[in-house]
Amino acid sequence: MTYEVACSKCGNTLYSGFDLRSPNDVLKLFGYKCKKCGAKLAPEKFRVEVRKIDGSFS
Ligand SMILES: [Zn+2]
Image 1: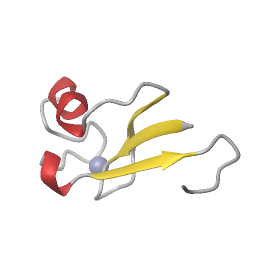
Image 2: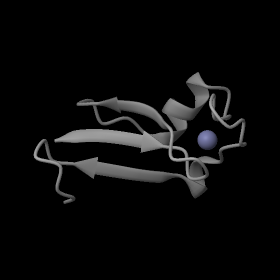
Image 3: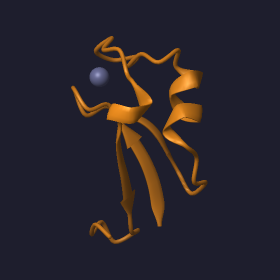
């Protein structure tokens, strides 16, 4: 299983890995902004995807 946090605006992957981390912890690393499109990212609006390694959604 891969845990992925992506920008809800541009879809840029901010964090991808096997450790389950809260969106808030991930966003804090980026100053609550997307490094690609500059959108402000609020943890409660965040899209979190958990994917299996074969690519299907769980
Ligand atoms: Zn973005």
